[in-house]
Length: 106
Image (cartoon, rainbow, N blue to C red):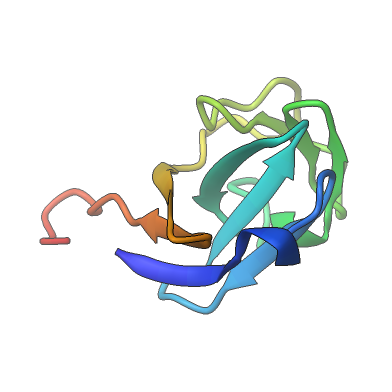
């Protein structure tokens, strides 16, 4: 469990990048919190710097979009999903729970 920021520090429609390895992006989309790997699977671009529309994030490089709920790409050029991560709020602090990569421990 990794503390990210206070809930009031992440307004609706905004994101924050967590400096983990690999980096994780946390989004406040319409009042719901989502976390995904921050790197686009098409090319190395930070998704936290993309454009949020509803529950879709658009990569700032080549306009691939990903569903924040599933991590699945919704259009080309991305073909592979990004990992999603569980998000909780405890005492007003947003926490992300990174999913382990295959073959590694969390």
